[in-house]
Image (cartoon, rainbow, N blue to C red; front, side):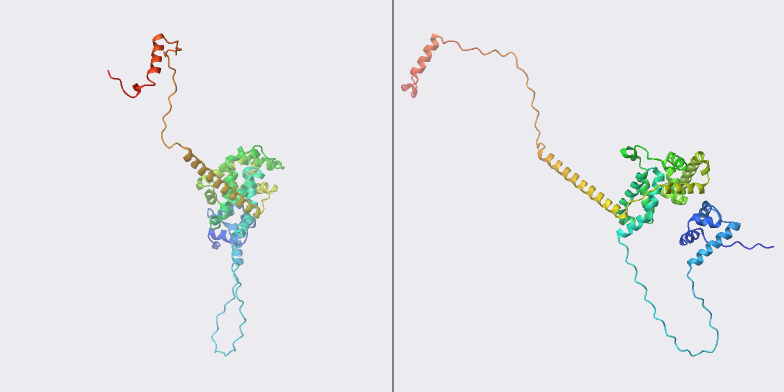
Length: 368
C-alpha cells in the first residue's frame, strides 16, 4: 500500500501574504484549521511545518485564498484544423477608456488616514503599558504631533505605523512622568476583579518585559519584529518574553496559555472607553506647539544677543589698578596757634610796609 504524497504548501512568506490578502487574522486562521494562534504564527515564520490532517486543512484554506486572489481567466481552446471559412468581421465593441488615476492624497489627508487607522489601537496599547487612561491618550497625541512635524520623514518610512507606535511607547514609558503632579497618584483600577489582577501584574513587570509582552502577545508581532522595535537582539527579546510570561503565570496560573493571555490582554484594553482626539485637533496642536517653541527660541536668541551687547558696552577697555586702602598716620605734631608779635617783629613789619612800598628803591637797587 503506497501513501499519497503530502499536499504541497507555499513558502512561509507566501502563506502570510495570502492570509493578509484575504483579510484574515492569525486567530481566524487558527480557528478554521483547529489550532492555536501560536501554531499559525510558527507556520508563517517557518519555525515549524503543518503535519497530518492539519496540513490538509491548512492547504485547502490556502488554495481557497489563492483562487479568490487570482482573477478568473477565460478558457482558451486550441483551434481545430479545418478548411478556412470566410466569416464576416464582427463589430467590435467600444473599449471603455481607463478611469483617470485618483489624485494623490495631500499630506493632511494622508496623516488623517494614518491617524484613523492607528490611533484607537495605540491608545489601548499605551493603557496596557501605563495603566493610566489620560497618559495613554496623551502619549498617542504627542506621538502623532511629532509625526506631523516630521511628516516628510514619516511619509516615506517603511512602516509609518511602527514609527508612531515606537514614539508613543517611548513617551508613555518615560520615567519623568512620576515627577508630574497629575501622575503622582494612581488612577482608578478596572472595575472587573480579574482585570484588576492582570493590570497589577503587568505594572509589576520591568519596563522592557512589559513592552515586549504587549508587542508580541498584545499587538501580534513576530519575534524578530518585536526585537527590532525594542532595539534588542532576538534571543534577548525571547528571554524577556519568557520571563514576563512566567511572572504572569506565577500570579495568575489560568494565563499560562499564550492564547488565553492574548485574549485577556485584548479584553482588558477593550473594556476601557479610551477615545483618541480627532485628527484636525492633533494637527492644530502640533502646529501650535511648533510655533510656541519657535518663538521661544527666537526670544532666547534675542535675549542672549542683547545681554552680550550690553556686556561688551559696559565692560572696561583697559586695566585699572585697584586703589590701596587708606592708613592712619601717627606722630604728626598738633598745630599751634600764632601768638602776639615781638618788638623786633613789629619793627620789621613797619619797616617793610613803609620802605618798600614807595621810593626809588622799588625799581633801582641800592649800592653797597
